[in-house]
Amino acid sequence: MKKILNELFEHRSLSKDQARQILLDLSKHAFNEHELSAFMTVFLMRTITMDELMGFREALLELAVPIDFEGRPVMDIVGTGGDGKNTFNISTLSCFIVAGAGHPVAKHGSYGASSISGASNLMDAIGYKFKNDQDKLRQELDAANMCFLHAPVFHPALKTVGPIRKNLGVRTFFNMLGPMVNPSKPAFQLVGVYNLEMARIYNYLLQSSDRKYALVHALDGYDEISLTSDVKVITSDGERVFTPEYLGGMSVAPHEIYGGDTVEEAAKLFMAILKGEGTMAQHAVVSANAAMAMLLTGKYTSYADAFDAAKESLISRKAYGVLKSLVAIQ
Image (cartoon, rainbow, N blue to C red; front, side, top):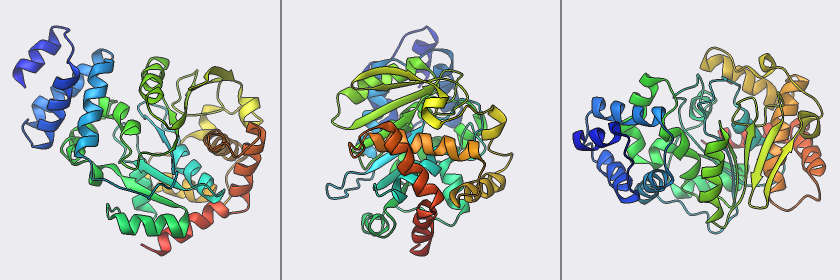
């Protein structure tokens, strides 16, 4: 690792093969926590290259516990994190809405590293048991139309760096990798990114796959459709900028989507919104993200139709029914 660090400190980048090998070695506990901290910090000072990201991604997928949903076209909605905004769990809530609207979801997530409550913190708080047993996950998908893939139990390498990421408390390249290594290989994916440079890197990677995807970035820095500003949406068909009014029927203020100061507060907020008891702003934001994801399925003639279906899933408590079914079979 010393040689690698010296090269990186001299502003050199890794080849795809080097990046892949580092992640493979990391999974074998070849490096100590100080070496790993220094290594991760490098990518806070410069942008990760395409070769580096592809190498890291290849290694994680190679090491991942496989999961097969027998050709079932699942959806994932995920943000990179690291935007520093501390919103409530918009992506996770959107997944429940999508599942309630009839589209199977395999949500991939982990504990918060740079935020107070990541998807896994939340799922743990509401009684979900993490697992990588394929049969049990298939049962959840059959019963609730949704299952949750806790990244550390599918990606052994992530267990090694989890405590270090939490202690650093800042965005690392693992934030960038998370959305790209869902072991279920979803057919549809909505990815929120914290800057446009990362959006274009993801776009390059996803264009080489056969999945339907949309990358979203709020122009004021959120890694999701926040309705606090215009949003750039990138798909394989090109790029468009949408206003909050078009996407959610309203513009909201940052404090209206704040996620609280503890995991307990985040979980309480999550449950209120999922039961249809949130504010207009909260409902609009989660419905907008769910709608953009649902539009990828090709089952809606327009974004407006998808948004109406998302709102109906939330207000009718179909989304909440997904949670009840999911928790009941744990």
